[in-house]
Image 1: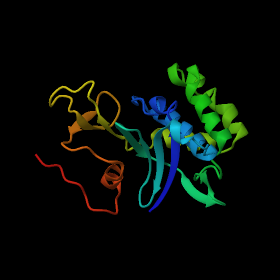
Image 2: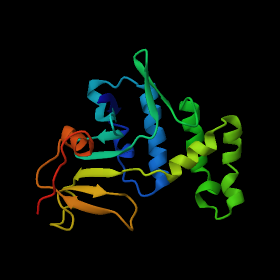
Image 3: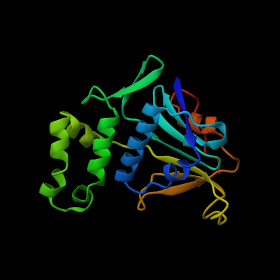
Image 4: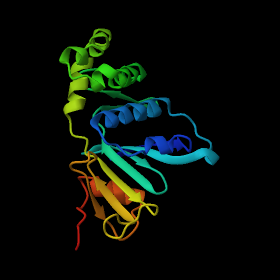
Length: 208
C-alpha cells in the first residue's frame, strides 16, 4: 500500500467536506483535490484544518479528514512518483495536469452542460476542450459513467436525533433516492476508516 498525505488549510476544509449530492459535484471535488495534490502547498502548522490522503493499493481512493467528518471516494487515475512529487494519467490522457482539471471544471460548470436538455447544447462546451486535448471526451465520459464508491463518516452533534440520525454514523451513497445511514457506537479514527475500505485487510462486521 502507498499513502500520499497532504495538509489542508482551515480555510479550505468546510468547502471540501461539504456534502455531495450529484455526480457533477463529485467530479468537481475530484478535480479540486487533484489541483491540491499537484501544487502540494506548504500549510503552516497553525492553519491546518484537515488532511487529504491518496491511498493506492488494490484499491485507489481519496480520503478527506477533518476533526468530525471523513469523506472517501474512488480515485480513477494512475499514480506515478516523479522526483519526490506525483503525477497522474489515464487510459485516455498521458497527463492529468492543472490544464486538464481546469478544462473539466469549466465544462462541468457550464450552464449548457449542467442544465440543458438538448444534446446539441450539452456537447457544445466539450468540443473545444476535446480539440485542445484529444482524449478529453472519452476520459470525461468514463468519469461520468464510473462508480464513485462514496462513503462519509460524521460525528454530528448538531443534528443528532436518536436512531434516526445517530451521533456517529456513515452515510452511504450521496444522491437523495438511495442514500442511507449506518450508526456506529464508537468513534472511528482515520486509520479505521481506511481499513474499512482496504480490500487486502480483514472485513469489518455489522453487528445488531
